[in-house]
Length: 90
Image (tube, rainbow, N blue to C red; front, side, top):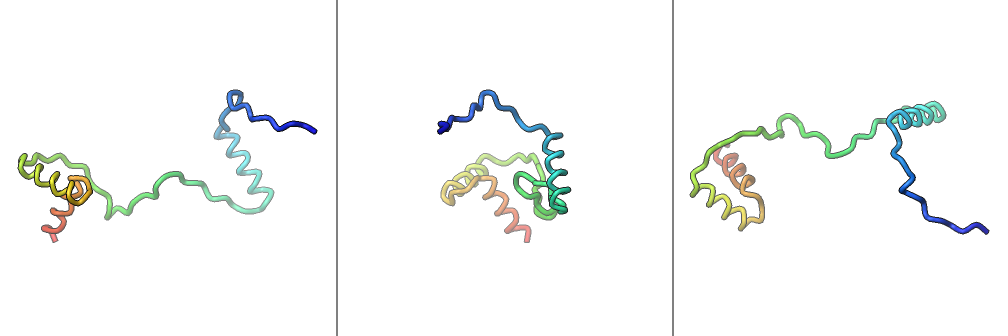
């Protein structure tokens, strides 16, 4: 009986994009179905929920207040500033 050996990862290589596409096409041809492209990562947010990057200058006391509130709430100070602005903008 043959003994089981560990796979030698030092001699392995990554699968190329061309090889992956060839395998995908072969599976589609064999099974007669269309495979969906795999999307890695977080799904994109809707346009209405995307944040815009801005640079603002805040008074040191306002920033200290936001950081103090953030530590009490257990969130980031930018979250405190954002929620405060949204609350007063509505």
